Length: 587
Image 1: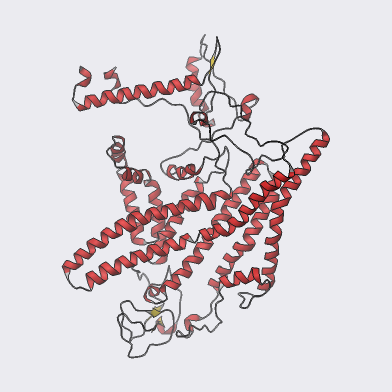
Image 2: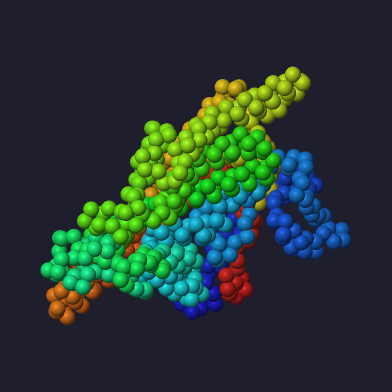
């Protein structure tokens, strides 16, 4: 009777108590079913992190003193006997900052034991890719402040979540608060590079371009840049004519100190300029990101002692990637660094005194279709360099395809002549099958106390034809993946463009046209309310989720498939549930 004192609170305490009892008994029963039993002995076996062995001893040793029949034996790193064939679990020490990003990686797959963990790199690359797509100072600042609010109210919100008073959507945002914080920071940073704040440029410095003195416009269809002057009669607020910009400070051209010059937002070639800029940036970021994954794969080969895969697979892959798309990134940088003097040319014909800039797309197409032909070279000797790079790329493909199967087949024949047999397929990142993910979830956990008899190694004595098929699949996948994965990074450009255009449409339609141009304060307040709602619903919610998912795709597919197997098993230690408060009063 006393247990129900306090009305609903007392009933809830009793329910929590019985839930805790049932959960505890269930975990104990599962652990007991995984014991080895004999008439005189009950044994448990499992895994423990090396850094917590002393904690295990301090917990168990008090029960092993005297005549107790409880004893503990801990094997070291070099496990021998039947336990040597067991697949070891994967365990990472996490905190509040790293857990969300490790969760992103674990959703794709658990890392193998001692495999390079992509989570460490994802902490930086994931928010950066998001920021490139979501780049806006205003929206990035709003996201950053929202994450700061969730972190500051962390304790009270955690209690609210445990009580079940938090909505599902709010719960997702709260659990991702430490990921949203750097995402907002990178969005703010990329927005400052784009010089974009709610679709409005901020003139932090003097612009390198200035319209002619007779030009009067709030947002014209001007073409920037040029040093020519406009007709004296040119005076328009929204003209379809080609307005002319002149260089600032008496024609002394200078580069804008930081980010994009705000004058680009007042020109009719604004979209073409930002398309070119963001598309080239996306390609460079994508190639660098993929090369990082390829070099991480080399570390996996070195750690596993797989010299054959390092020489016969990794080196040809690097050669193919750098001689094609790596070279394309180099051309982009060279073109950016070349001064064609277009700022001093004729704006009507867009002529440049130092020569017309070449089209990189056409240059890359002719590099493969017409080797040795470069109509408008970027540097001396470009034709010979491109022919050499094509030969490297073409030669690397048969090396990737034939080298490893031939060497493995030769090793097999040698071992057969000696009378012994060994596995043809090496214990490499690409060939070992670790664990069976079709097993019951209880058997995936590495705290269970039963022997696993699986060998987890590849079948022996594969035929040369099977090895060729296996290697051919990997070669075709990599070569085609270099093309498709590089093109996939163009989503950075596409999402950034879509975000900027949506913000621009909302600002011009609601704030400028309906609010400011109406010169009616009631219209202005109403237009601001509609703009704020549209910005929050579309840009701060829907577009945020869209950019998040696209950044997720880039890491799962384009980055991690270069080195990450993700077929390991997570360390899931045995633990009893925490006692709810007030248990002593209920017992």
